[in-house]
Length: 68
Image (cartoon, rainbow, N blue to C red; front, side):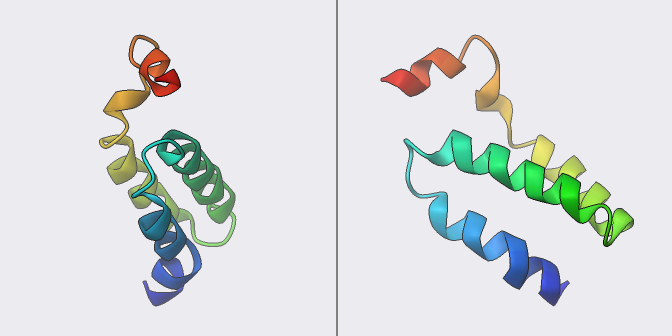
């Protein structure tokens, strides 16, 4: 758990406060988690499942709002 927090989640946590870069950072975090499946499949799968519940703002109707 500590490896996951220090290696991946800390960067995502500190960059989440920037509303302009948040969608890009979230997609980059998902990419990192998908790559982490090769190291620890069960932890990455659980993290991806939980994180996907927080991606409501990346729908095709709402992604246009990121330009404003």
